[in-house]
Length: 102
Length: 240
Image (cartoon, rainbow over all chains, first blue to last red; front, side, top):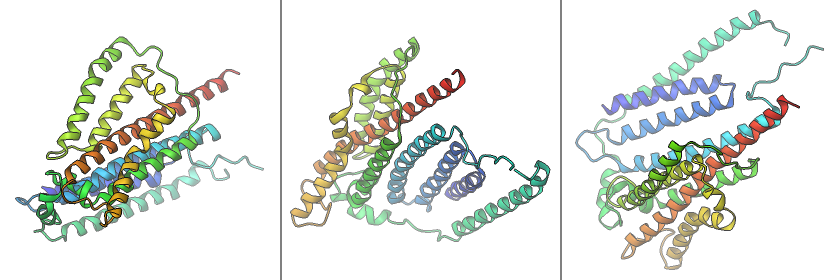
C-alpha cells in the first residue's frame, strides 16, 4: 500500500512538473508548484511507513510539517509578486508581449 | 510576431510530445528508484524510540520537531519571517473591510471563531502525546483570523504596529533565546535535555504557535490588500 501512495506522489509530481514548464500564467505555475510539493509530501509520508507492522518513521513526518508551512509562505510570496507584476505590467502572463512589426 | 499561427503549430506539438516523453522518463526513473529501495526498514524510528523517554514529548513527531531537530524548526520560523518581510516590501494598497459580509457569514464567524481558538489550544496541548502541535494550532488560529476578516471584523486592523511585530518575532526570539541559554549553560546550541525539557518545549511551542498564526494571517491579509488595489487600478482604467 505505501508503494501505491508513493507512486501516486511521483505521478503528481511529474504531472505538475509538466504544468510548471508549460505555464505562462504565474498563478498556474504557482498552483503547479504546490501540486509538485504535495507529491513530494505524499512520497515522504508513504515512505515513512514502508514496512508494515513497524512504527512509522517520525523524521519524514516532521519534515513534511515543516515543508507544508514553508510551501504556504512561499506561495503567499509568489502571489504578492504576481500582484506586483500585474500592477506594474498590466498583464497576468510572463510571456513576452507581441512586438509590433517594424 | 513574424511567424503565423500555422507555422508555429508543428514545432509546438513536437515540443509538447518531447516534454511529455521527458516527464514520463522522469516518472519512470523515480518509480524505479522507489521500487529498488530496501523493503525492510524502519528508518530512524528506532533511534527516535530509544531517545523518546527523555525527550519531553511522548509524540515522536513533536519530539523530532522540537527536540532532536530543533534547529530545523528554528530555521523554518526564520524562513516564515523572511517570506513575510519580502511580502511587506512588495505589497501595496490598503486593507478594506468587507462592507456587507452577509448575516450567515457573521453568524458563522461568531460561532466558529471561539471554537477554533479552543481547538487551537487543544491542538497545542495534545501535540505533546498525540498528533498535533505548534504548526497545526498556528494554522487554526490563522484560519480563525481569516474568518474574522471575511466577516468584516476590524480586529486584524487593530492589531498592528509594535504589538503585531512583537507577536510575529516572538517564536524566533524565544527559540534563539533558548539556544543561547543552552550555550551559556555549557551545552550545545538548543540542547535543553534534562529536568526542564518538557516546560521548555511547551514555551517554545506556545510562542511558535502565536508567531506562525500571526505570520500566516498577515500573509493572507497582504494578498487581500494587493487584490483590492489591483481591482481599483482595473476599475480606474475602465472608466477614465
